[in-house]
Length: 446
Ligand SMILES: Cc1cc2nc3c(=O)[nH]c(=O)nc-3n(C[C@H](O)[C@H](O)[C@H](O)COP(=O)(O)OP(=O)(O)OC[C@H]3O[C@@H](n4cnc5c(N)ncnc54)[C@H](O)[C@@H]3O)c2cc1C
Image (cartoon, rainbow, N blue to C red; front, top):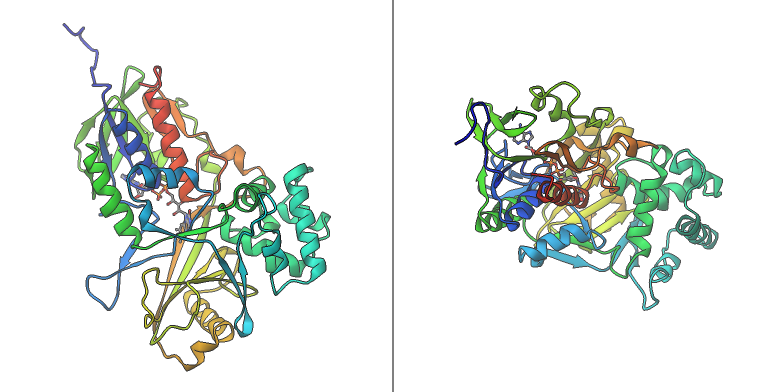
């Protein structure tokens, strides 16, 4: 006999709202722990910001809206892929190719020396830096590892205190920092910048390596991961919009969908961007949930997609020294005749480019950096700009990021924006999803 007024919701049932990497990871963790999981995603496909769009010309073919790179140090995401048996869908690239105008290249790869000095020879071999530059960089990285960045301020200010001049900052430090943090070092949080260099360059022999998907992002996240989730018993509802969180007697009881349907559950993971939370949490008692994400600010990334009539880049990818874009990527499964090339422009908010001037600038750069492009014909181009790609990471940003996990009885938050200690990446999203699910599985979680 259930006393009158008590709402009984099976604690066995969980809902994950948001089918990006964070939501996928949370749903997987909960399902593997025996929960009955429903994953609710408003778009037609899983993957969130790691998405693809239909090719404008070739029917049925998808193109990724922007290349997504996983580094060797992304242990949580790589572990998730292994658990799902999908690790083969990422191809490791042990060599990073640095490219400068005229097509001059350096191979940046680990030597036989043990970590943390396994990349010392690679640094020494970078063609575009002088001997004094390299010595300054090596000494600064060593100081970063041993002493940290010390006094408050931006990472750029720390570099200046280390005597790193504007050219070295542009051609080395910012090539890494803008790619990883989507913001130049001049405004960046020193703690996150330090993490990039320690985790990515010193921690392990393969931590700097790129892992690039050999299928489209939609295939990876929606088809392959979707199948694995379904195989683990997760019910996936795409094109389904969550409107709000339902609560009763001081704990979560489910969610309300935009069409009025109510789904009951004993626990809910909200794995959506921080901007979506206030509306979804409006029905909860005032002050019950403090998420603090409201101080975060969006940061954009643009991808310039170029279709040439032949291959113009000799390597699968290239880090560009002194160009508008930081990276060029060929199609991961391209054959020798495939002339598709994608240029990724991070830190786009710091420039005043509109789509047309951005495309023109990138095309001019390709003419300078890829001599083979002078014989090639550009067939078409498309600029995809994501204004909410990541969030800005000024000093102190960590105080604006709540920890992933429970924020109200039965309700946990996840997402790349939560306080994982990682920048806005798929790795951070994955960690947050696992962590938030784990708090719900704990005896007092739900
Ligand atoms: C252009 C670009 C390039 C990037 N490059 C890289 C890279 O190279 N490497 C890397 O690691 N990261 C990269 N990132 C960042 C990476 O994509 C994100 O950090 C990660 O995908 C975030 O995952 P998430 O699950 O936290 O959030 P999201 O991917 O934003 O997922 C949230 C999901 O919630 C859904 N949702 C929102 N509201 C509702 C609702 N009301 N009901 C139901 N569902 C809802 C959304 O549709 C979305 O699918 C890039 C991002 C962009 C945009």
